[in-house]
Image 1 (cartoon, rainbow, N blue to C red):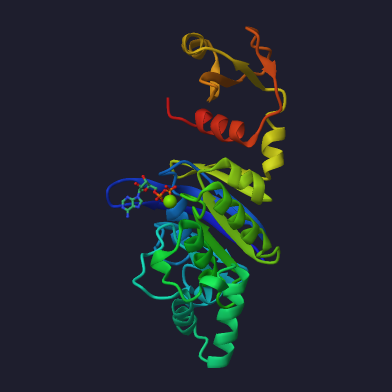
Image 2 (image 1 turned 60 degrees about the vertical axis):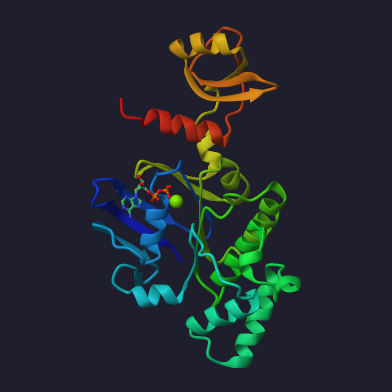
Length: 292
Ligand code: ADP
Ligand code: MG
């Protein structure tokens, strides 16, 4: 099954063009939607999840016309929104049970088994009787995945799930996501390049509502082969270099800027050619598509 998005556009009443003629084909497996804050990721995800309407364009999941067959889509959808509501003092067990009822799982013993299995799967069984409102960030996100998995969804949408997680929580969350399986479509949005590198077999980069790249992470870095150059520099020299070079990224290493520049030929000045990474792809795409 594939998710096919064609010429999707959305302008909010305040004039912000959040989606600008987006066309994408998303296969099964983990798909990374990478873009800075305000790129349009949540707008795209809410639109796919049938929670808001585009101005124009179409979306199909296999045979389902997403924009007209909302009910059919919701039956096969698992969705973890970016802002996952704050709960009152309801235990994970009771909350999941309640959500399973809402998803139409009316048989009590079936539901009990399902809820237990989900809690086990996201490793919250020892905390199942604790209130979700008292969970850590990582536990909340794992709970969020559990609720998204109710009813064996074919399409799972998780919007910035790793924001605010510490490195340990992020790792546990990565492991959980990558276990979800290769036979469903999982769309993960993030502004963190590392999330995509570690998890996703396919990806898109969006910025200001526009699609800048769509393909595999490997093809994206291969396209930059031989064009990324690195130099450890000083703050003063960086100012001069940025006048004459396309500085793709700047990272402080022991307080000194380590910079990457994009150049088709040897930029001189002591730069070393290095293999391009996904961060280079992300920033070169955004630089290349910035309005003048
Ligand atoms: P992302 O999830 O990539 O951060 P969003 O889809 O949330 O991006 O937002 C894309 C753009 O649309 C931003 O400029 C944002 O301010 C704007 N936007 C999002 N939601 C609304 C809304 N309900 N009304 C008006 N503007 C919005
Ligand atoms: Mg968002």
